[in-house]
Amino acid sequence: MAASFATTRLLTSLLFGVSPTDPITFAAVATLLCLIALAAPYIPARRAIQLDPNSALRYE
Image 1 (cartoon, one colour):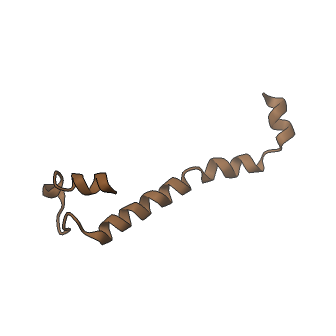
Image 2 (cartoon, rainbow, N blue to C red; image 1 turned 180 degrees about the vertical axis):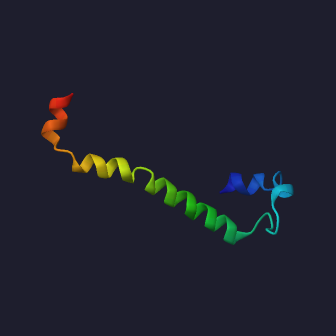
Image 3 (cartoon, rainbow, N blue to C red; image 1 turned 135 degrees about the vertical axis):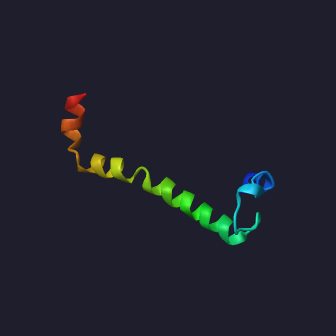
């Protein structure tokens, strides 16, 4: 969060309609990144749960 707050000065020209230090935007982006980080391993984990451990060990 501190690094993103510091780099807003560099990206001010790319922000349209949003102030560089808008707390709602910071919170929304942080929440979105956390949700993506939690959802990314969901599909492989779900697939791994459905496998039979014995057959997976025999395969290797």
